[in-house]
Length: 183
Image 1 (cartoon, rainbow, N blue to C red):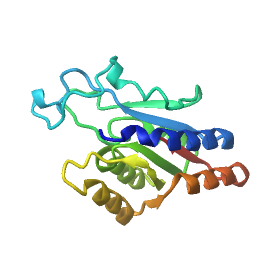
Image 2: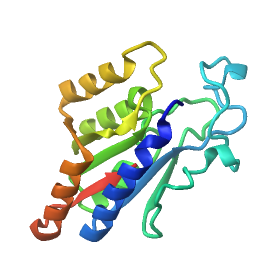
Image 3: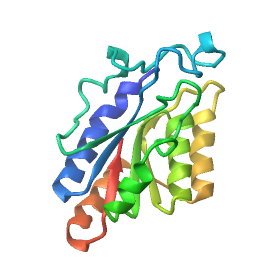
C-alpha cells in the first residue's frame, strides 16, 4: 500500500509512551493460510497477503515490538474474513481481564482493519481513540479512508493524533486509568 510505512515512526513514539506509562500494548495482524477466502484465487477481492510464516506476514522491520506486547493473530480461518482484531479472537477478553477501558488504535488499513476494529471495540464497551496520523487507507474507492474515519466517529470513536495520545498516556501513569495501545 502506498505510504503505509509512514505510520511506523509515529506509532513507535506512541508505543514508547505506552511502555513508559506501563499500559498494555497489543498488536493485531492478519495471519492468513495460503488458501484464505479473501484472496482472489479463492474468490476474494485481495491479492495474497500476510500469509502465515512468510516474510509478508511479518511486522514492518522498523516497528517497535516490545517483548511485553501481546500479538493477536486474526484471519487465520481459511473460510472466514476477519478485518477486526476482535473477530474470532480473544482480544476483548484479554483487555477486560487487564481492566482496560480505552484503546488507542493506529496502523493499516483505515478503511478495513482500523475501522472494523474501532467499531468492534466500541461494541465491546471500550472507549476508542483512532490516531488519524497513525493510519493509512487502501482507498479501493477514492475517499474510503475518510468515510471509514467518519463512520468510526459517528459510532462514538474519538479521532485524535499521536501527540494527543502521548499526552493521555503520560497522564495514565498517575490516574489509575488503564488504556491500551494497539497497532
